[in-house]
Image 1 (cartoon, rainbow, N blue to C red):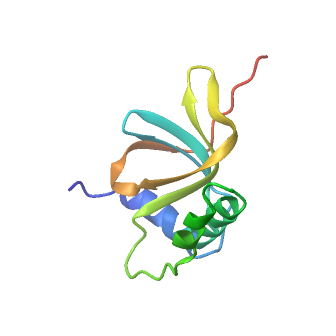
Image 2: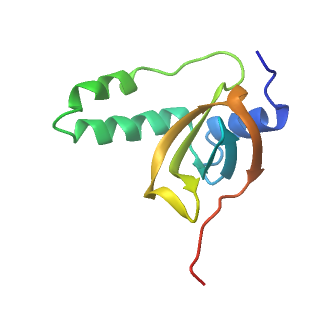
Image 3: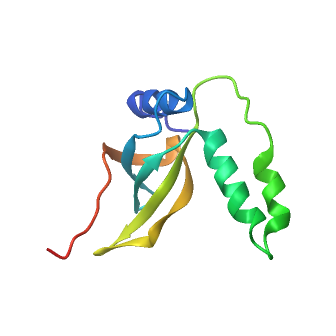
Length: 119
C-alpha cells in the first residue's frame, strides 16, 4: 500500500475541518484526470443523498449516504463536487459531477481546476 502524499492529506484535512470549501484541485488517478472543487465528506454525502432522493429509480440508495461519517485519523478520500473528468478538449460531465477518490490512488495533482475554452 503506497503512502499518501502528506501535502494532499493536509489539504484534505483542512477541507474536512470545514474551514474552506473553495479549494480547487486537479488529480491524476488510474490514468484519469479529474478536476473540480473539494468538499467536506459530510457535505458531499448530503448532496449525493439529495440527488438520489430526487430519483425515482435510485431513491432507495439515498439512505446509504445519510450515515454518520465520524472517523479517527487523517482523511483517506478526496470528495469532489462540480468536478469533471478531462477527456480531450471537454470535461465530462459538462455541468460537473460528484467524485470520491482514495488519496492513496492519486499519482499526481496540482492546485486549481482546468477549464477549456474555444478562444
